[in-house]
Image (tube, rainbow, N blue to C red; front, top):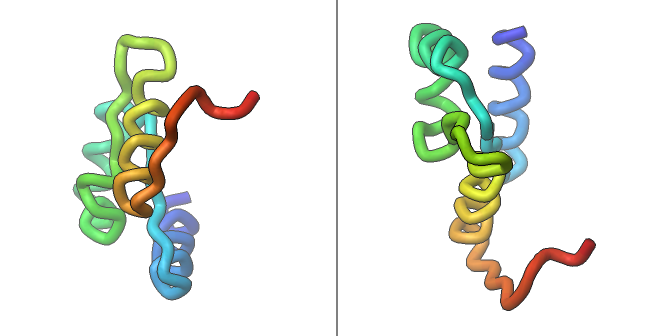
Length: 78
């Protein structure tokens, strides 16, 4: 599974994209760091799990918007 994730990270980078992982639990974060995949993903692209419902997702969306310069005036369309 780590090899698949690493290939996907490299593929996205080759296309000018970046992966953001959100809701990452501590054991997975340790594994990503040990395997050096965290270095390729980037620490700012690994959003830890939070106690708050959708907290990690909100942080990931904010990070994606920051990177792309996207601004949102209201709640997402739903």
